Image (cartoon, rainbow, N blue to C red; front, side, top):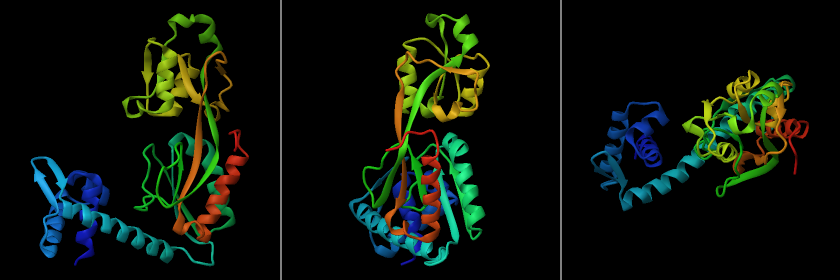
Length: 286
């Protein structure tokens, strides 16, 4: 059996569509279809039931996908073993973290790792989605929510508090009843901070929307309205005043790493640097 066929089928099972699987693997969707057909032929089993645009895994398909996921995890672990020495602090470490958090808190520890351990290369991916550690989209993930399952080593780094902020001039010139708000676009509509902002706005308009937290802070600094920001995002914006009579939101920050690589020297060095950075920040710690 061709492992590439199995790999392409697993991507389809995880993504749910040929297009999604193709994007995940960086290939054409026709390649996914061809590889899945090849796997079905080699196994003599129908794995995918194609109903128009809908794809449904058959019972055999679900069973193969379950086994394929285990194979993928072990293969990824071997790849990590190959690119990270068991005794030397060298290798490539990929970190996934929310963009705003990355810019404010992670640049310093990553640079420090490079100074102390030039054999370590670091890729920091700022993304709002939760990168899959099982598929090795990242080695280390910084997340605002604790994973409920999976073979992970999980460390609570601290807690971030979100407050409402505005400039003093805005608060003096606009009555609370006429406040307008600055929030996220639809891509973050389900985030706790956006839901709390809507609760605080209580029907008052969200007049400026952006998926970029730095833009929200900049707009608020220019008297653009009331914004909900984490405390670290306003450390260098003295013009923004916290509105203390509002209810703040607290979110936990977690460091997550797959258990089978947590003791790889390069991974351990980066984890320690990230933990130290959070200990030295203004974030509340457990």
